[in-house]
Length: 159
Length: 159
Figure (tube, rainbow over the protein chains, first blue to last red):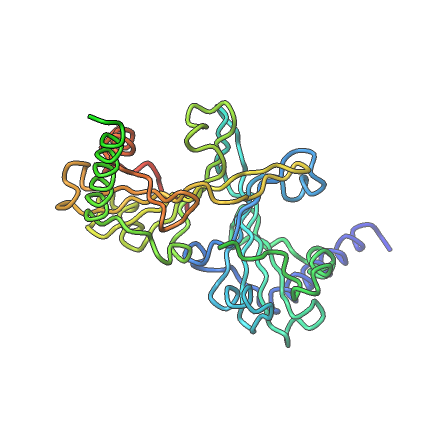
């Protein structure tokens, strides 16, 4: 097979994959800035996840996700947002910089049965036009899988 | 005057002062954890305000305060919360520790005319039973006064 044919085939596969993920329907979480602020964490240089998640991140939960944080069980329609921002330090104050990525997990035990009932997507720089997850199982669930006892959710509610 | 009489007089004054502040009515902001999360900042050792506000703080706004962040003018009933937590660092992750103080500012241009139309209170460790502001003008407004152009509010809305 000639190189350009291989390139074309790979492009077609990637496109199909992307469309398939989109069809699964984890869309941009409109209005999440009025949801519950669950918690905040800052990952600094040297942290094992720094390359992927360095900076300051906030976790937001919609009403159903908030309920799940109390009960440990999540109803379909529960959505969490992981809002990752740069964390510049100046004059001993660490503040919020520009958005690096906005990640989303949405519960639907039918559509997302192969990833614990959760669908995953992430938007580069928070741009709804720039989804970057093409394989949720590898890119997201492989890590969330460790939280099976908590229905695959890392966060806990801080009063 | 005997020492015990002086002690009693001071106690009476402090109590009167406390009651007067309470009568002004900046009460504990019930339900603020479901308000808008406006922004987060971490003040580290070496920052000029570290002694008072060292740690990680989140600012929350109720509906009226959120509207004011857009318009620059705040209606009576607008309330901001400044939620200050310890910020322990372990393994290059800075997380949220226990609550140091929960500070509140509430707009009422009639009741709080002498402090820019804002009433101030703060609760030690977030305990509704432990208000610590006895002189809002000195303890709070003296600093907020610098933000007159923004109706005495430091925060700006981060989309």
